[in-house]
Length: 475
Image (cartoon, rainbow, N blue to C red):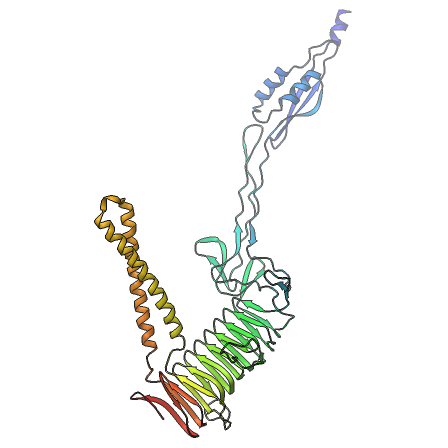
């Protein structure tokens, strides 16, 4: 009988299974039979220690299993999984292209249907795209204390030879504009288009303001504005519109306004054609137009009732051709005005000026104003320094140094402005080589000005060149 009871008393058992990747340990407990000894937590901890399990032991789960005396493949230890690295990213830094809509004029309820907002454009050096490098991730740890390496993120680079853009010299992960123009997203980067192309400029396109160049195959309608940091090329005509270019303006057709350039008070009329370029301006004809060019103005056929100002030359007509008339208005240039015909039989008031930089007077006025302001500031600082020299103990050393630095800086500015003033005054002197050349006819009543000398043409003349000689205009 005693032997039979002894056979029924069986102690509880347990087994710990460690996963092949050593990231988990599972516990199985078999309960005792016939009053046998149950498995306790201390036994399980010793077994874990023997198996060298030192990380991620789940004490609450282990001890709860030991307390119940039963477990079926229960998780009692778990390692820390590695965190995979993040993939590289290319993040656009250019504003999202929004639908261009009529803009509300400032502080009013008036909608300007010509202003649809600016075209997205960039200048050299503007940021286009940022590369965010991949991360290595965070390594994990298995339950034996071993390191589990992380999977690094996938890399991604900017596409090679992206037109109009380049890697920043200061930041290899930054793509910047190499030229001015319109940024366009492409695969793995951004390209910059230096030129935008349109059919016409009207209410459907709105006014254009662009950092690159603009090509318009058709016309620019009345009341519209086109501004470009580069060149403007127009295949048709410009009608009572405003153009402004940082480069050249080329108009295959004509430039024509709807009213005289100036009213009786000498103010500009709003319905004129207004074209301004830092480079040259060329057109088939110009009528009732205000045209200002930093370099030359070239008109193939006719300049009528217009005001043309060129930093270089004004040429109306081509040598040997019949067309090339200047009729009415004002035409001024630094070096040369060349036309086939100037004036008309009807003696329409026409004035031609050469020999003076048309921009120098305005620049000189600005420089004189700045020079006057700096001289007054220098005078005041000089008075303060004189007082400091008489009373040195009343001022801190730093205050004295600051006033001395201000004086030196102002003296440098005054010297530079004085030099600019002299150079501009030299430009305003008569240009000995300035000429007004007429291939065929210049008519009675045309006013000629070379430098500060003027001449009223008192008879119809043919094939003449006006120049300055011994202080007088001769031809």
